Length: 195
Image (cartoon, rainbow, N blue to C red; front, side):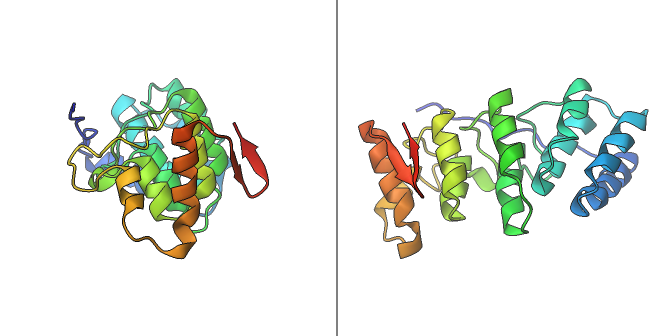
């Protein structure tokens, strides 16, 4: 089985750290128009900082700021200092009650890798299952996430292996989803049929 390297963790100098801090504050207040204005008016956002910002800001949802960063050359699959990818950041944003699903889907349609290990080696599908997010799991499967794939450390096992263990009742949806997905059946989750 081929091992996948974790995304590179960029070094961030103090100017970058200050700009990241400012933009995180704006995004956490859902002031996305201000985030876009700051990005467009900044003279020192290079590829590395743009990539870090995508991973950092994805936690707060909002879709407006994404394209200005990609215009600056940001990578869809880059990571922030903690090794969190944009897809993982979107998933973690739900925990803090941010609406990240539209951004999550946009990143997938733009080509973000649904099988790229994120923070602590977890795959996005594993995170979606662990955090009880059926819509995110379905989007990942539709966009090519492999439920049989293990993380690159083999510490967490595949999503399928996670679901073979005793799981809490509220995660039965995930076991059924992966089982039906692997059989090629359509999935009906909350009255939404996914072929």
